[in-house]
Image (cartoon, rainbow, N blue to C red):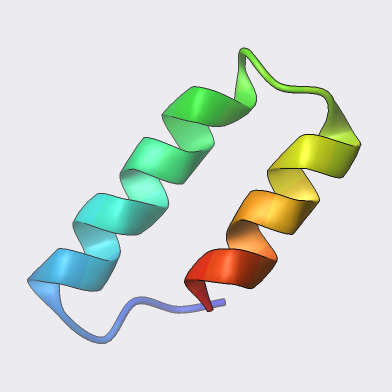
Amino acid sequence: MTARSPRETMLLSNTIALADYLVPEQCLQLVEDLC
């Protein structure tokens, strides 16, 4: 997964940060929702 714009980069960074607080299934669902 690659970011193509500053906004996508920010969203991806936020998702990675949030992943520290979520179980893998929730993180995967969040990423799928963003893509």
